[in-house]
Image (tube, rainbow, N blue to C red; front, side):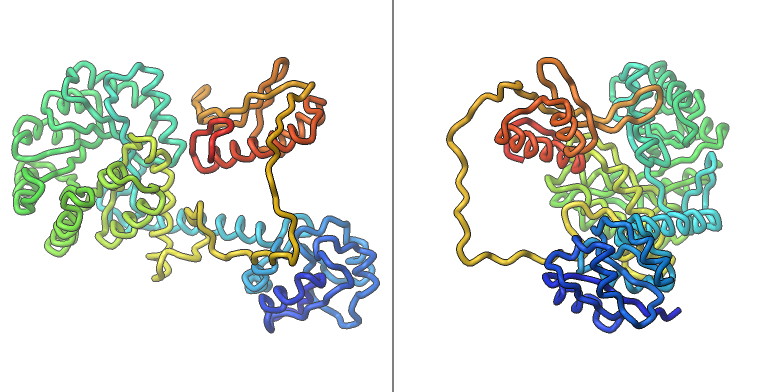
Length: 494
């Protein structure tokens, strides 16, 4: 639906607004420098005689424009916070009801994300699958599922194992894998499965080559077995068939793809019907490209068997941010028609990989549905990068050179120790980490730096400007650390 739209701005943003709007709307420049300071009274003074369907004011404008709306019978709504986003916002003007409370850029992001998740659910509901396990579809046209491994699960105390499982579930895992150390006893494996079953209703897998541990886990009701080859299949095949478990088949030697096909045929001959193939992904510099070639070769020769894709084999062994690596691996996996994305989140640098892979799997499902690259989907895992850069400021002609003070004065109101807490499990729920500011008499906890410093000021716990500025800097560093899943140490470089 075509709409007549007027975009209102101030003098400083005039050129940026006109570049972004182009021919999609008219622009009204009011007699004010900063656009966000526009008031209802000022807009009324310059109100256009032409009748518009919608007037967009700056997203950061704070006045009440409802009176003007009634007086002129014209919708007045918040546009985006930044002029650069106007083109993006205007492209949705016929589809979205803009808000007088929420800036249009934020409203659209929320709406597009909700639409993306709704479409993902619709796709999954209608998808055909090769396997169906405890309500989870595997293979076929269903979304790739994320398998999160609890490393050395059988040696963890019951509460710690339960907490790790709850954490992975709330991070978006579709399957929980119980990794077994080499010195694990069958009774310990069985107990770990029982604890896991009490912690979640998701499908469970066991990760070991040891037949006695696999059989113990099968007795306890494990759903998926990792990993079968010619060395252990004869000792566990009967229990797999008896329990209708899913078997992940691996080659006898990672370089030997023929042994993978041989082992799959042996599993089928033994009566194992639910099979996932794992050609084994290897890390960069250690056979990564060759392993991708094996996946590609397998999929060319076998277009039906679901594929296991060990993304964690790469993210855990590369000193690089996991976000981009996981997104790219998910893109490779979807082209290979993989059904499981595996990660252990074992190292600190891979913390958050379950959520990253889950989001990436959703992105790939949406991209496949649209027949497009995985961009502009309404959902993303951009963290340090941005889709649209905001304009930079101009260097003034004669700026005062900034210099830090060498002096330090103790605030009579006292000092603060600032740190952050990690995500924790309380009563079966994930509680996100918080910023903590402690002094002699108070401990203040908050999600945002602003909330914490505002509370400190309100309680009269800071009396010097330099101390307040210092606290603001440190608290903002702490907030960024929480958002970026980093650790924080007061006074250290971020």
